[in-house]
Image (cartoon, rainbow, N blue to C red):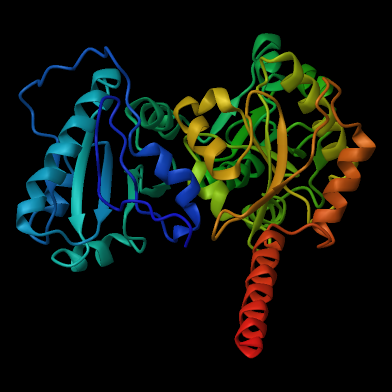
Length: 414
């Protein structure tokens, strides 16, 4: 592989460590994270309560019963000399997280894949080097960067109800302001309605990764163009929702529909779900667009990109990942070096997830952005296989072959 990320955990405030994800295909995302840190943070003070536990067959049940929320790091086997280091790293993370969540009862645990394999099996943990969150009889795998601020935000989402109720105009406006996430909204008689119960059960299956909303107010429902027991599905950045067919629904119907539509045409890379997003490639490739939303050129490019996505939303082979460099400032130099691009201006390219080979749309030197038609044509060439990130490798191989032939000819001449 082109890149080989370290699989060891390294911390600095805010503490971040590589989760050692499934394959080295995540290297381009992971490598730049290992040195992340923030300067000048106030270090939280230890409150005298041990919240990081080395879980084993004897203590895991009693320890987990103490907390409303349990965060478990299921890690590769480490030698005794390294065990204390992992304990310290988790202590640092726990202190920062709990400094923001001091009103919540949260515990942290470590499980070694070799010495604690029975515990992992009992808890249903199957992905080594992963973070699992246990809350309200649910197991949630965390697929984001292990930074305290990101984890805090995610834990806040976890402890919220799986369905958020829209009661008034202000909350309806807040619902409409959510553009970057998949969201659903339904209209039901009340919380005791059996149809709402089915909807809530479906929400629990996807909580907190997909946002579920509901209203019991006829006026709000009218503004959402919803009839009783009807649910609309909103894809990110799309103006109009899709009404889920077959109402009134049972949980299985809703789950099946969401699973069939959970890869948006345009999706934003978020710190709390970056690994999950990156693993969801199409034929080993990602179309990636870099653009700063707060930059005039970036905003203009995003507007064009969104129009292309809206016009092609029914294409199952199209999914574009938008990365705002402002969200990952310390990864920018790494990405620029790896992909040989300048992220001070918008870029769009196709990346091979295994070796980080890439091909990028050539932009003019002037300030003009590509038109929607030009962008759509380039994307179509990628989907049809006329543009592939391995082309450069093929060219290199051809050059190597030519050099070998020249050497052979020189030998024969001699």
